[in-house]
Image 1: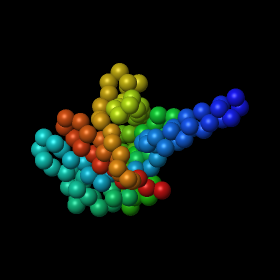
Image 2: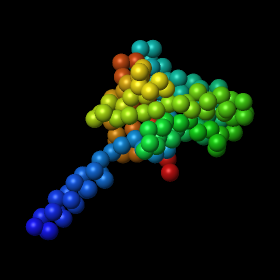
Image 3: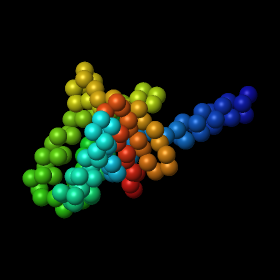
Image 4: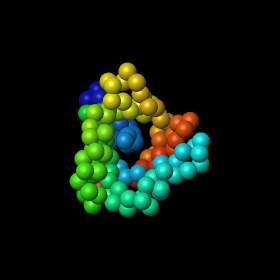
Length: 134
């Protein structure tokens, strides 16, 4: 009986540990408007190359934060960007990731998929591709 319980526990733990989730540090690779056929992240990089070092931290406790600490952008820009994302929360429901700064009274929803070190968020309007960083 002990062996059966151990095998069951190990099986459940293995499945959970290999399940992909968005927790970690991510850089945006592209932010594509499906409607206008335009990559706004690429345009932002051409006018402000310093945003290449901005990343997002998605934490276990439901926080989604922009981190500009490694960016060479001016302090005013960094402070504004970090403040914009300072109250954002996330939650995952199967393949639906939801962002909110209103305790989920209002959400922005995306279908999330993973491919290697990339995470892709897609909805009717946008496709956002993130690359995982260490």
